[in-house]
Image 1 (spheres, one colour):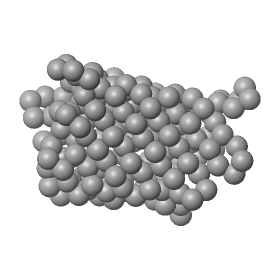
Image 2: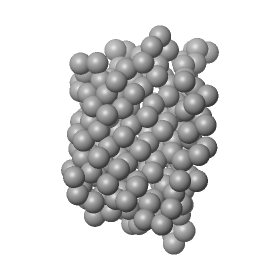
Image 3: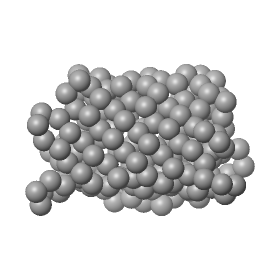
Length: 168
């Protein structure tokens, strides 16, 4: 699974053509809950195809007290409108975590155009837990460089990310 996901991460930007937008990003990640917290980094590739389909591949490495865990995921969201101007979406995902994998379902509203200010607010359900999440992205100048911030919370577990990305 890991080799296939990493191969897909390298090929996804090649699939970015005319009306599509692709982002490659790196984030600092922190997750806390139940009196514990872990820190690490997250790498990802996100592409929006024809303003309707959003595909995200991600890899995270989180560590605490010398113990590291690798987490990989893929999500596919379908926009009921156009992601370039803002759209309600529904999607499915798969998260490969140590000890097995978990499926997910998401529902939300997002604007993902790569120009100006982008956002994503939604709910993600994973194994009976429902997380509220908000992600924002801003452009840094006229090129493709941007910043991003994200938060999610399910009442017990909270996650935060902050990083940079590049739009193709």
